Image 1 (tube, rainbow, N blue to C red):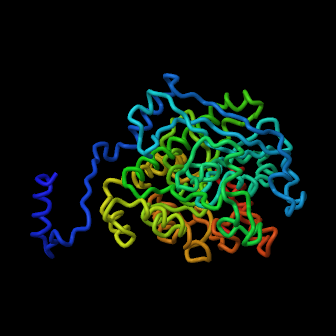
Image 2 (image 1 turned 180 degrees about the horizontal axis):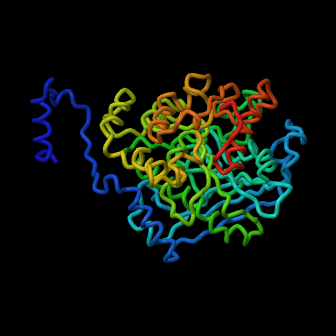
Length: 451
């Protein structure tokens, strides 16, 4: 190793300005063997594993016919959810791509191991086969967020909300040692610390529990570069497998859940925009989804990590490679540009919006089915979890015109889709709900204001 470093060190010493050995904190080497083909390669392996039968579409129903009052709580009147018949708790069984070291398993696509992705699903009172909005929780949130849109989805669209939890969220939140744990039982999940409301959720008093583990989302972005890249790749496949299972529909109808396999939509909160966009772009044509909305969405990993929640940043800093501290985190992420490029949105944005090839362009070349919703740049809340720079990076990567970028104000909470009807911003919240569900109901063609 010492010999291998002689030339790089000599080059640094001869640079202008020179960088001497005494100024170097740490030296790390990474492979980019797969380069920009990292995602297509992984998806090809995933598709082949499904065709071989290594993985199949499977769901586990843990509890069905849950009364809405049990989900909304006693503080929410029944008049807030007249269209919701019940809820279902369960999980979607997906490929386990990561080992215990949070790095890709070498034979993940040929040696079957699975992970349960927890979900909470709303069931509408009307309809014999209903469209489904897959809501992917962002930082500090969980599958409990299905309740935020359940009533309006069950109204006009007569549809369902399926809220899922990525690694380190909700039931998969870190344990007391900071390790994110999969496949917890309900009892184990109930024991997770929940003493405060998450993300400024106005449904509850600031000091009250809200049913979401207090550290939900912490650890989602590991500080180790390879773990960071591999965990994002695994998130893409998890989301894709959920989308594909709904489009296949067999696993759901087999559990007497009559989903409309041609009416699948995506709702990605905050940094969940990245895996949702890649999954929607690369999923095969037979299983593509109808619309994709980014709720307070953002792109650019450095912005999402460094300008995200304080607990999230602290965990990231704790896991940085040896010799690199918080002060060097931004520099490290900048230096890792090529290494992390395959999981950044520009690497797959053409799959979504490319002229002539984009999934969300109509035959005349117009974008259709994509919407960036809430909140507006510079408004209250936006700087805490998805900064204006991250939001602008998403707009730029996808080339979104202004009519597909919401101008809602962020007055309710940090992601602005929760129950503000209990607070002082009821009209704004109702407009936000109407925009989200109106976009779904029109299959991504139109939506009500304010724009």
